[in-house]
Image (cartoon, rainbow, N blue to C red; front, top):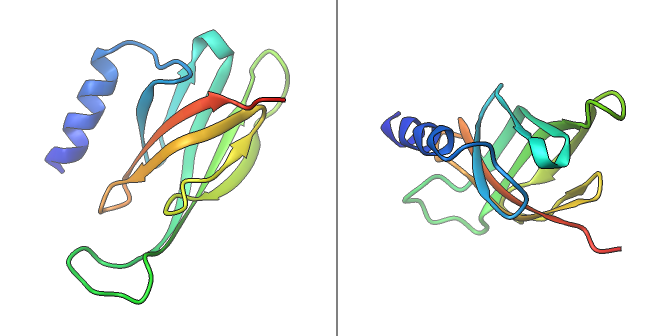
Length: 116
């Protein structure tokens, strides 16, 4: 719990995130990247990762469901990505870094603009 509170505090104390910044979302929470007119919501997670301290044949997977919207451009669109692989793209952005807290309550992301 303390881990999550520290992440939320650090995120809140640094101002709104921008492309290239790491930022943390709480499950059910949202953030806005004002310079991009972009709102992101962390909706759900299917956490099948290898438990911390265990030896597993694979790292497993953690599929997160998120939505994004550009309020000036239209309704929200949902997407999923595997946080363990840290690969994802949506709406002209690429997920450069993704990390899920051990409890899966907090998702940390860093985005970059997708090259055309």
